[in-house]
Image (cartoon, rainbow, N blue to C red; front, side):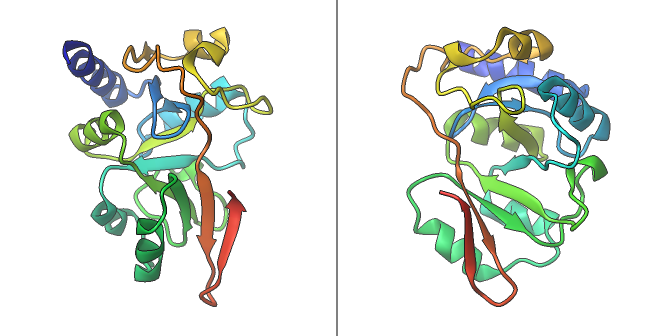
Length: 190
């Protein structure tokens, strides 16, 4: 528990200062930053060697927090996601309050509400959404376990979380869905 608490404190310090963290999420290990800080978001794009037009996922701790960052909430989405076992990211219309360079031209944002204890506590204490993009160079597979993470990623962040490094349970990226204007659902990644 001491390591868990220390990881949270170190991550908070890095996030508050515009830095990058490498942390376990409810899916794969992720590179994270303050989703409202454009300089921090730019650092993630550079580290991953990812084109700026490719959007990234953000994590929130509570479902109600979505209302702070979305102008067009749809209650049907919440009901649908509650019934799912696997972590699911939802693409929402009308994103507000995020770094401009995090949003694609259509103004959408991909959000996942986490259940994983470390992420949930970190986001609650930080009080803002955190970017979560897989800990890999763009174009390479997402790491299933910590030991799969490229040394360039590990060396490119400001803090690497100790918690769950020895967890060998293979992880998978989240499902991604989008609720369409006509009420239909599009599954972008299952």
